Amino acid sequence: MTLSALIFDVDGTLADTEEAHRQAFNRAFAAAGLDWHWDQDLYTRLLAVTGGQARMRFFLEQSKRPLLDDQDIADLHKSKTTFYVEAMQAGRVPLRSGVERLLGEARSEGLTLAIATTTTPVNFQSLIESTLGAAALDWFAVIGAGDCVENLKPAPDVYLWALDRLGLEPSQCLAFEDSANGLKAATAAGLATIVTPCPYTKNHDFTGALVVQDNLDEPDHVDVAFLRQLHGHL
Ligand code: XBP
Ligand code: MG
Figure (cartoon, rainbow, N blue to C red):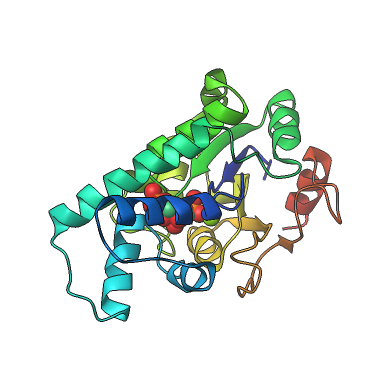
């Protein structure tokens, strides 16, 4: 089966964005007058839950705080997203090593690009606009983001949604992820997956990944030829 498309996760994979998410959550909590503060150790644990709203509910349950109703959670998350987009627009988060290179090579080689992320759509848009420019949003034939499916990663839904809109079989694609939840989601959708852990996910279990390496440049130089070779041995 020919390799036709590359499907990328966003947070932790395209860029090390989780620290910016963590800071945006804390800014939203402070702006709402809440005494909640997510330090890096706590956030590492909370990342077991994908989706910012679900993550806040998980935090309230785990810390035995009173639950907030859906509207309050949604309002808090909207505030957080505003702070996050501000950070992206300030250009504070670059793409990870090898990402821009591989995206360009894939386009030159006629591979289709797609996104399958748990994050809020505007978060992906602002990351691409601040790193590659708004026109680069058109590089992606399909953009599957948080609100297009009900069940977030590790459920396979967002990858199945992307494959359906691509009109491709899993065997014609490769997925790129940074986390155990993302690897589970892609694998459950039938996708062979390249994992490049980020600082928040470096201790995750990546059993079942096709490749796990520091980034797209090291130790192996992940280019289209490398991907075609990997894909050819599946
Ligand atoms: C990572 C996530 C997201 C982000 C926060 O998404 O799980 O929830 O941590 O973004 P990805 P939101 O699938 O790209 O790794 O607050 O918008 O959910
Ligand atoms: Mg991720």
